[in-house]
Structures are given as C-alpha cells and as structure tokens.
Image (cartoon, rainbow, N blue to C red):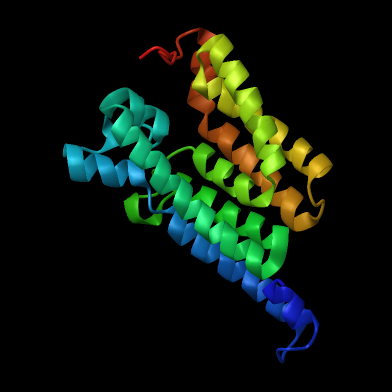
Length: 217
C-alpha cells in the first residue's frame, strides 16, 4: 500500500490536497539534491586529478568518461548516476505512485544537468532518465533500449540514439503507462531538456563532425 493510500483513507490529519502537493514538492527538491551528485565529476577529480568537464567532449557523463578514462571509470559513473536516481524515484513511487516517481525523476534529471554543487554545469541526463524509467515503467525503458541499441549499432552515434529515445519517450509513456499530468508533463520537460542539452551534438551531427563510438574498443 502506497503512503498516499493511507492519507486518502484518513490515517493522517490535514488536507489531502495540501499533503499531496507538499510531498510532490519535497520529492522534486530531494530529487534535485540527489541528482546534483554528479559521479563523473566526483570520480574524475578524486581518481584522475582533473575535471571531466575540461577534457574530451567536456560533458560530465558516462560516454565522455568511457572515452577518456576507460571502462572502469565509466562503469562506476554509470552505477553512481543510476543509483542516485533509482533510489529517490523508488521512494517517490512508494509515496505517490507513478506521479511521485516521475516528479522525483524530473528533479534528478535537472539536478544532473544543472548540479548545485558544481556550478550548475553537469551532464545531459540520459542515464538519470533511464533510471527513472526503470522505476516508472520498465516496459517503456525496454522499448527505448532496443531503439537506442539499434541506432547506435547502425550509426555509432551515442548522441543520436539518446536524442531519438528522448523524443519517443513521451509517446510511449502516454500509450503504455499512466496518463496523468504529473507523468506526461515531466516526461515532456525531460524530453525538451535532453534535446536542448544535446544541441551541440545536433550541430555536429548535421555537420558530419560528431564523434563516433568505437564499439570494438
């Protein structure tokens, strides 16, 4: 039983509507705080003595860590960025169902992209979005992973796979998930944010200068 079910059945005093929105705001704020823990920045500074945002593509994310520092650093980055979102989204789902998970996930994605601890310069939010979807709707995530793998395998462009999945995500959520304002609107915001954060990648894709992923390496 979700925490909200207890509230709606009268186990707690106070206005249900007020409590509902208060919990949503709390989930967003905590999600933002957790999302601001950017593990690409943390790991690059602690173990390699430099800021990942100053090397390679200068993006504080999994792909740049893989290119610059290798598989171990990338795996640690993936694990940290995945867990920070997964835990808060799981808490959000326990409290308010899909709405809570999505609002918490939105906070995490924004925090990852604009981390308060690191001068508001972070990553592009793709892994955080995937982690949110695992809690929110694993079926949607599975479809998007298949699409991502096909695009990256065919083109070697991680950015193109990420952008296309971000664009498709709201449609899949509306068709395969719970269609309410606290799921659809955060999904649309995340789509716009992820595409916006890939604006330089889009420019390079159009120019034919985008870096390709060496799948064998």
